[in-house]
Image (tube, rainbow, N blue to C red; front, side):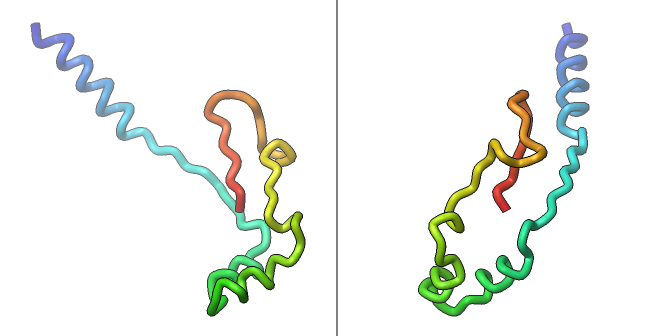
Length: 75
């Protein structure tokens, strides 16, 4: 009677204790620093003057795959 419960709990603990690590690098650290330290929203808008600055193409990233579980960060 308790064997299925113990087995389920063991599997659950195993799944929850699995570590996942992802490596991520900021594409433009200088711009990110300027955006974070800008005093006003207008200052931030002036740092991104072109329309292309506001778009991110997830499909164009080298690590993009259509397989389930694939992750692409827009940074």
